[in-house]
Length: 276
Image (cartoon, rainbow, N blue to C red):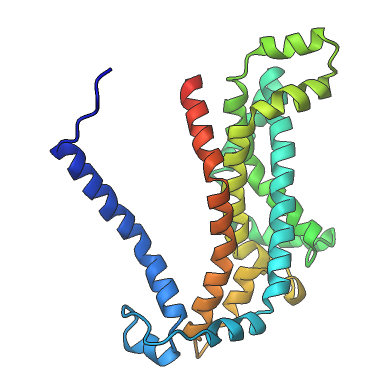
């Protein structure tokens, strides 16, 4: 077995990777550093380190934006929407792959085509339908919206992954007396874990940080973290010191969530490469 040699090319690639990483970390530096500054210091020099840590920014932002309530709303909406997408998306994709016929193929084509439709083009019809069915200013209403808008990408990703699962595994389970639902939940769905983790991360990042749809659908009592953060930006003034502190508090949970699932992401990439 040949040992890997450390040469100039490897050194250059490492330096390039470090510089690229630093480039991506620059926005986080500005966000965190300025969240500890006073409003005057931010305007004076936003690139400098804070002269003293203004912890009061976080205390004021926490109270003004009612962070506990906003976090609770974001958490409930994100968890329920992502869970619904994972369950219904995986079941729909499995059905389309294992039962190929003209209407399943047409339905899959329509889901794929729906991914190119911009949300802004259907905002007005969405609000009209929401008013008709009393879905405005309710968590079930926005949950249904996320389930509809996220199904296209979710089904598309699951559809490709289900094809890599051997049919023989399911046939063996049927021979052992497993029901159709048992085949899916006991055999197929556990094998979809790498793609499920990917779908959970993608949809969680989207739903947690989404602003436009909650702005249209939710009232003041159901404001999510992005909507609460927007309260620091008025028509004539912008409270950058409090807004940046609020942004840090809003970003931190999803960053922790991503780091927690990082191991599963690597496992999913490895599993996909082995299958390929």
